[in-house]
Amino acid sequence: MLLKIVTIGDERLSQKSTDVESVNDEIRTLVKNMFDTMYAANGIGLAGVQVGVMKRLFVIDVPGKIGSTKIAMINPVIKEMSAEKELGEEGCLSLPGTCGEVLRSKRITVEYTDLKGKRKTLKATGLLAVCIQHEYDHLDGITFVDRLDPNERNVKIRESKKYMKQNGF
Ligand code: NI
Image (cartoon, rainbow, N blue to C red; front, top):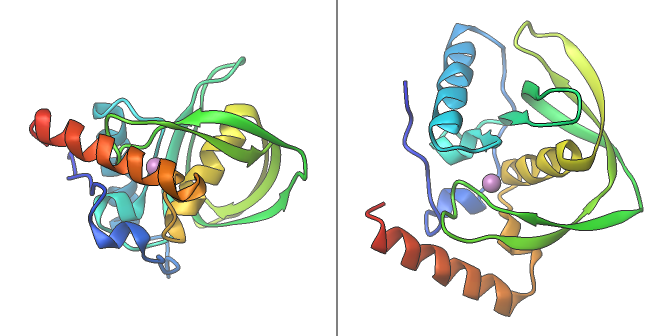
């Protein structure tokens, strides 16, 4: 089932999500619907808040050199972030029609609960590391434009709102 994506201007995008209490069928159905919604919108990541569920979880499917990494992360915690950072272009399904250059750690270690309720650890680099940091930010009420300078942030938000108006969002 496709879910409605929350877009910029909705105050939920700047609110913190709370922990998932148990990984049950309701969560597994939500995750399936989030994957469907993300693929339908041609995204590589989608957080709960972006479909109006203020819970700490996100789904990602990131292309890489040896195939794609498709994971649902529940109650993720970023345990390590490299001091070494890199600028990279990011977009967001909640800000259609715009993108921006964001500085992110090159390497991270993240702990999360999987769909069976098991705690896992993942080390990530490259686009996967960027995507996890981007989605993790959503759980804390941060969108990528909040990491740009304030003028650029406003320009990008205006650009996205204009795009949505013109494209019938
Ligand atoms: Ni996003």
